[in-house]
Image (cartoon, rainbow, N blue to C red; front, top):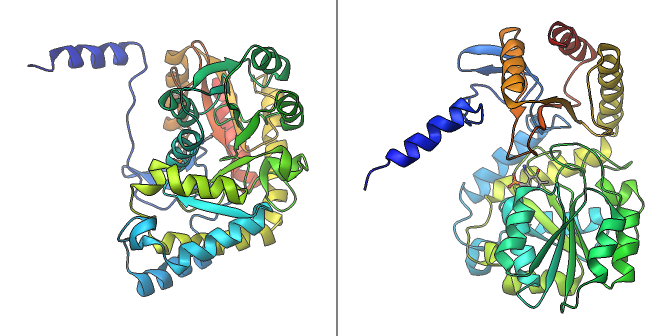
Length: 384
Ligand code: PMP
């Protein structure tokens, strides 16, 4: 059997400006990167606090690699659960104010594992229509009745919850929406959940480190009581600057995940050195509050500059600051012009975002300088 039909599909994607391709970085994640031999000022990393390349984080990684070796060696439940993993779980539980936290190798796996350990076809899942792909996939895989409510709209959720007679109800939302940067209205969602006895699960991949005085994410930002947010997911590859993810919650929740989350049980543990490095980045993330202050200033500077240029932004208080373009071809064109100017920003197109919603997803980091943001604004002036 030939692959001709695949080739035809790929060609069509190219014609529609929807073809995805990768670039190869020759440097660490930092504002100035070298990509395929050329130097760029990058605004597309999720390393929001500039910790991915922090000397102390690197040192902890190196020391732990000397002690534990590189690979986790086995799954957590066989003999892949090291002291480094254990200490990080304890620290994350304390950081989130929950009885327990459980490490997963990626955020994608945390979401798939958690939802599928909790739900099956007797249950119902309710998702914000702009939730991350891993949450949507998690819901579909579970076999639970699947419903999407209007973006960040507690009334829309309320109406859908009122009509269900399932065994368990799980409401799932991004904390900070990954492609829009806006923050889920957790107090409103939580009060609807309480009314209908539904659990609330928040994937705060982009909130941890960025929101809240201590970087505790959306839960801290809204001062949510722990009991109002039953399943809290964080990823470590963004604000923490390392890799992996965790789920935090009650003893019963975490014990259930250990028993049933297949993406926890049937996979090799994350490298212990990653856990050790994350323990250091967690300390820096909490202590170095200047990183969040600096981000806040850069966000303000960028938004003000864009508004002067007449660019369309989303109402986002976070480092995710998409510039709305519309057509995929136009987004690609602008990203290419910026690239010629030495600025690297990725164009995000359907199906990652809704049809007609192509955008330049600008992300800011505490590692950027005021001058670098000015340089971006100058480059944008030429294309606006
Ligand atoms: N959830 C959200 C909201 C995300 O944006 C991402 C990463 N893009 C993930 C989960 C997946 O996390 P990871 O990269 O650790 O698999």
